[in-house]
Image (cartoon, rainbow, N blue to C red; front, side, top):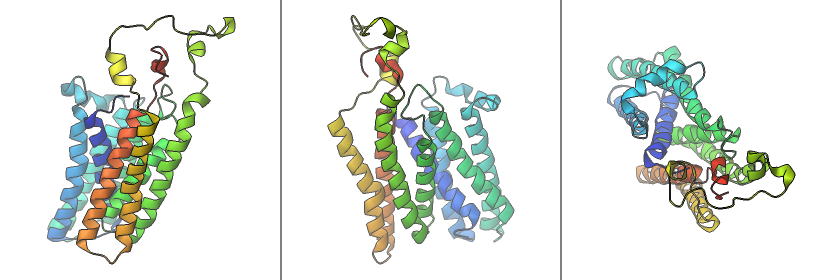
Length: 290
């Protein structure tokens, strides 16, 4: 699929923001006053900023409120409801920490769970799509959740947790790539199965459907060379996992911590760009792109 910047920023930054809210809700750390305000400000800037970025990809942004009405069938609706509920509960919890030096644990834990629920519902928007075999896998929600929790731990200053979780997230990301490369072929979807003409012989397109581009090609067919994909995967893994782990293992300093955060975010952005660029929508069969 076409890797739109707004969608990439949304999925990465909102994931980091809700990941940080998850750790704050659990009480790791448990700051009060000005320090609490800084932590919650960062979390809300990331989470809300990511949500706002997602609206730029909507055809009719003014209709965004309608997303809340289809919660029985739509993962997008469930995401919207989870996000609002999490933000409201964590606002109450954060207000107690900032202004009253109080940590209302029940509210915090519930808000933290809903924060992770928001990341999960976001991932399920992609996981449910059978038309994109690479996404239609249990590894997709695991990938989103592991990166959110690991990035949240890093932002929350939970160094020990962050070390292990970043390594785990890197392993899940690697498995997502390796297994994802086989998903399209394993799905059994071909031009023959799509047209139901396989029983009469080899099926091939007589000529291209269009002489130029169109909406489907722009939105659902994006081809990236294997050589470039491999290089970007190496860069992503180095930035999101290896470099942050090295920086966290050396004697702690705020400079090293800041560099670890920047490297991790850059790596996740690269990996998420590949997530969309290598989506392999089955509509590409119609245009001879798969």
